[in-house]
Image 1: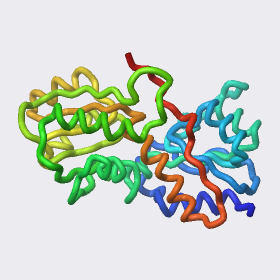
Image 2 (image 1 turned 180 degrees about the vertical axis):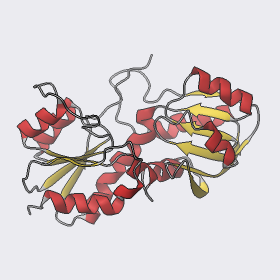
Image 3 (image 1 turned 45 degrees about the vertical axis):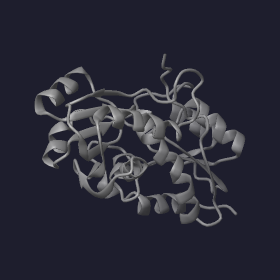
Length: 259
């Protein structure tokens, strides 16, 4: 059964309303090859390997979290992903910060994996805060490594997830989660009453600031905190568009290898 790309985009717009996106973002139907499709592939990132996987599976559209076009294009060549997509006749729908903020989206998925309850939005909706079974920051970091590692595509080498943390020495009862690059949002976590912020990426100075503010900090990896939602999206999209066969990418791996 062939389905129009616009029908699939409209279904995604209901799951991740575009009005939830940040002003600087570029979500939407970013590559439209104008062809109806029977199969779709979901992914966190569109990479050459993911495009090749979509071709092998006969998927005419890739639904991804990270935008395949972010800044204005001034030129194209054979190494550019939009070029590869058009060459393969594969459309691309990308839902970024709107999928972070959406109900049942990236941060709700992350909160569910970590066992959070009574969650509420923070950071313009792009994060969640809620209760968690009391634990130490090191124990939370270990829990994140274990649970998120079970969702990620098996790595080529090394551990599936590499987690680092800054321990404030106090129990974590209220946790804030912001998937991806959320290390700069310490103040938002504190304002929400969190004892600890768990995010994907946090830098040296974020850890220093967290210690100064008395906030625990766990950085569990950009890929690890977001890929589970991209994989889970396959089932949701399948239900939202009857007749569409949807597959979760197995070639969308963490770009880093860990020792």
